[in-house]
Image (cartoon, rainbow, N blue to C red; front, side, top):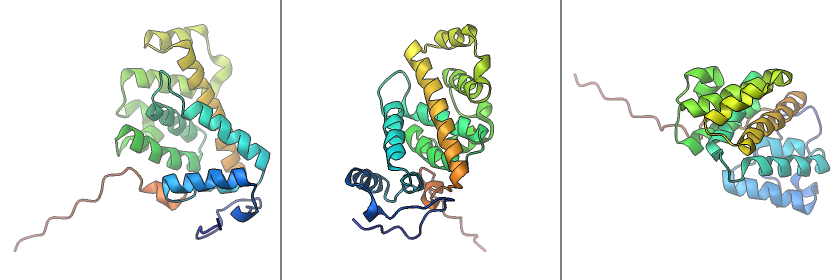
Length: 204
């Protein structure tokens, strides 16, 4: 399949043409395009290093697509909050779009990225995001008491591992986005938002 994207995504490193990539990578990119309706720039930018591309998306799938005590929407919430702390525009916008869709809350991503403590989340989710923020900013300061507090909110040890692993993995993603100067696709900005309501006509 030839690369039909309107423009090469921004990157400080060479972005390979899709036709030049190994078959398995082309299939992965084609699948993303079929699902999303466009190719997220992260696929094309990280294709610069094929072995790392494969490892990156295998780990992402292992963390984000599994069934466990965290919903897929909650996983996206963790990504948005910690990516905002890391000032990663790509991940805030891209995963914010997915969070809006998963949670069916058009305003959620903006709330999470700006001040998650005032977002439309449950007390349990707030505890989850507090812990993710601690991992993102001060992982060396985590205590057994921090884990016990999560258990009191109903999180299992496997859930706690997931929170930490998602936060840690996307710290890598955030930093690679900064290194490459990667920007989110325009399509992400409008996904999962409420359609504009028609303005009422003034009757004279």
